[in-house]
Length: 349
Image 1: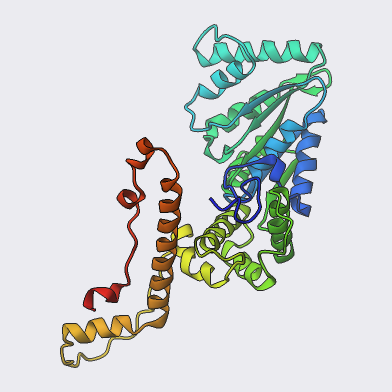
Image 2 (image 1 turned 180 degrees about the horizontal axis):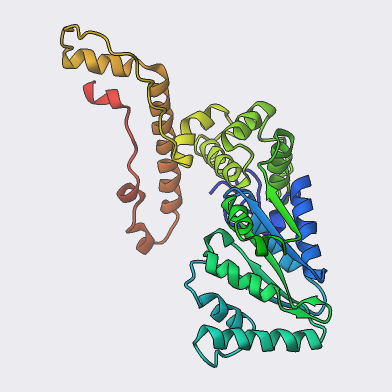
């Protein structure tokens, strides 16, 4: 929506993983090196954990895209699996037909496959995203597969990625934990990294003008997002939409306060309960008194007014866009889909 307005040729803040947009902070660079080493090490087994939206999947995509040489990748991203589903998925990823649906038969089939690949000198790499969903039985099966040694070491290298609880699930199985060469946890970006992250994504998207997000705005974004890249994307995207809807080429930090609950699903903090006091009969407020007390809150009214004005501007833009289209498209008029909001007090005037 706002790409042309800000001179961009790509969407800078999508929440879906795009590995060519990845900002390689110090910790992301370390995780990338650990994952790459697991691929080519004869004892490669790495567990990468991190909060939701910290960049694990994006890192995996980058690692896979940069793989070179003769190897076989078995990448699994769906992990809500039953007992024998993991073996079935591994066989399908290996390009093999399942000869027998029993778990034991599939285990022998995988074993034969790993032995043949080891004889050919071709490493087999198993990568599993969202691995925190794996059951204890699934993890035990992975331990069993990594325990099958070839002449050069374990027949299968493994990279597990998942949310923070993944590390606990792995360490709860000592035989599996001892086979893991490296555990690494991705934290949120620092304040300085958040600033560089925002500027980097805008640069990749084609922005070459003045800086859109000033230091104070970035500071607030970092505070709200805790440095998690996906949350940074959501907040920056929302603030760009606000600026576009109001026809202004700059970011207003006030927008962050008015949209954060809508974007992040936050709720107002509950009021702290005070010690009970003897009940005192208070005079009942009239309806007009209650409505006056509610309207007298400047922040609430200011936010409502800004939202109303923004929606009216978007409505005007949609009307202008639809007026240039053909008659058959004009049957879906913007007035049928987007109605301008009026100020809550306008009903009384």
